[in-house]
Length: 173
Image 1 (tube, one colour):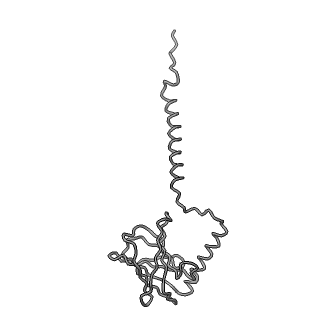
Image 2 (cartoon, rainbow, N blue to C red):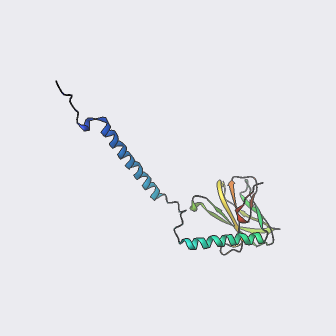
Image 3 (cartoon, rainbow, N blue to C red):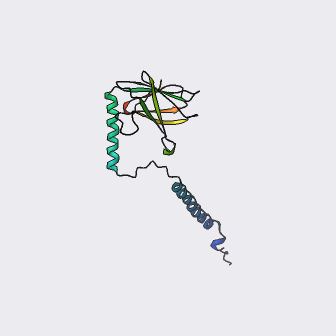
């Protein structure tokens, strides 16, 4: 009676298959680690959480002040001229407004504009060409230490007007 010959382990399929899975998972996870280190998104707050909480309270106070002044605004972006037109209604009319377009995921795409008062609560400035995607909008009367703030959200290109209200509520016409 002859015994069946046993092939050595390195000539069999299954050990190499399992080793291949192990090495492929190491390579893929190393690739993800390198990608996550090189593409820092900057959205994680790494500061003192107490200071961050105080800043949130300041933002809420600015929105409450805008609500007390009965402020609201309509923003339109002219598709032909790229003019940004804001119609402000309420109890105050500053000479300039500051508009911040904040991109939700990449802080290096944020844009700021200064709008000049032309007449009866209408403010205008030249906007960027081909503005696309979703943006958070903030309007305030000063770049730093503003008394009030209106916020909203818009997806461009949009031929409708976007309402900017205290407290972040948005409406499109």
